[in-house]
Amino acid sequence: MKIRKAVIPAAGFGTRFLPVTKSQPKEMIPVVDKPVIQYVVEEAVNSGITDILLIIGRGKRAIEEYFDRSWELEKALEEKGKIEQLNQLRAITNLANIHFVWQKELNGLGHAITHARTFVGNEPFAVLLGDTLLESDNEPVTMQLIKQYNKKKRSIVALENVPPELVHRYGIIDGIEEGEGLFKAKNFIEKPRAEEAPSTMAVASRYVFTPSIFDMLDNTPVGLNGEIQLTDAMRMLLLQEEIYGFCFEGTRYDIGNKLNFIKTNLIYGLKNQEIGPELKKWLENFLGK
Ligand code: UTP
Image (cartoon, rainbow, N blue to C red):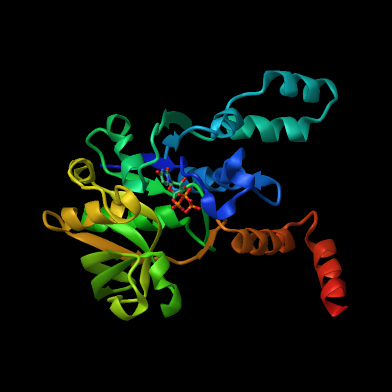
């Protein structure tokens, strides 16, 4: 079955980026001139996804408004002859069929995904975390995962090799390498200590799941940090179905923390045609001092 649905959880508190996230969704934080959530939606669309469910919550209304049409603004731009900006705005609302659901209590990523059951039905689907940008030279990372899914017809997660001192921040796979970047999972461990980690391959914010994940999530007890952990549901799914991991081609930018947000903006700013050359000159001069 062709994968055409994606779920983007974007309801989290964003505590690593307080105080700005007190009233501003972290998914709306800009990378140059676009909010990070737009890059995520574009990755899904460029991977063949036609229907997207955004999981939002209190304080996340700006995300809904961003993907809605702004008639007054469009009219004003039209009257002023600002056609390029007008087309840019219209393109945002026409990206895909975008649906919203509210996660009323923030009980973790696994809990967020349970809200997608009715939307997804009995189809395989993609999950893209709304605060993380994945850049690749050739194919979007979600498309890379979908291609692997099409070979195996089993759930598959994006994998990134992280430095050993950072494994405690991620879900880590214990797997058997099958070649060409593919791993067959034996286990997943959420945020292990470096000395306990079975590998340094971290689950990296993109997934394709068979619909069986929903039954697992329904039976997943509250875990680490009092949250329903997606990793725990994946471990349960492993008892019934194989799960694979795939080392994607590309780079991950998690803008959910301050340092990465600044770094990502510099990287994307330097690559931007309009501001890149001037930013480079200014940076060289600034650092030279
Ligand atoms: P994170 O753990 O990075 O998000 O979850 P967070 O909880 O917002 O951030 P911190 O740790 O407090 O700074 C990854 C993704 O899952 C979503 C988040 O919005 C983010 O995109 N999420 C997390 C939910 O949708 N609901 C939740 O209950 C938790």
